Length: 110
Length: 114
Picture (tube, rainbow over the protein chains, first blue to last red):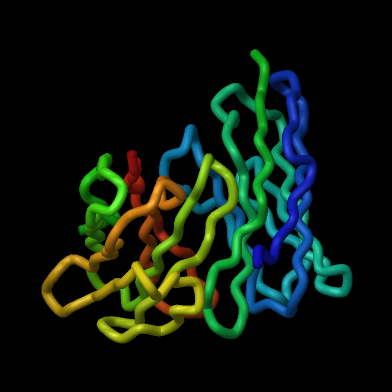
């Protein structure tokens, strides 16, 4: 069964605002990764955070991981219209199987 | 190559026909994964390979689905006797190692069963 649950399912914001999406998972993990998908195309890797890390930054992206709560958040600052996409978290555990969340559809309005 | 190449991009099959999808992983990547995405929603894990060996096949509907990764050939996913519910986008991904590395995804093959 799907490991990750993401919320919100959909998010609509104005350009320049920040977007926050959350991911919860069920079992222990090696790492958690965030991906972006544009219009049903392939997934693009955004950032990887290991189980012993609490926060990671990459450009306008900030990811946090709370293993005690089994949750992660992705923050996109100063959003742009080009950020419009679906965002998925994926957890990787001992079997090295990427288990994806249900995704958050982000729409950034110009 | 530097990207995961999936062929064909689109495939239409009549119910009951066979479908075969191909994936060329990035050169040097040892792990290959197949996922099924229905209606732009969740990604269902199907199978993974470590080189030519099946690593994890817990997601495969074994009655009709099979997959291979043979040396010097693209990996393949074959569906015998397709059903309407097999209509989905099938994604292949490859990664250099198993742990703490990113997976690179192909652009997918859209299978439509009519």
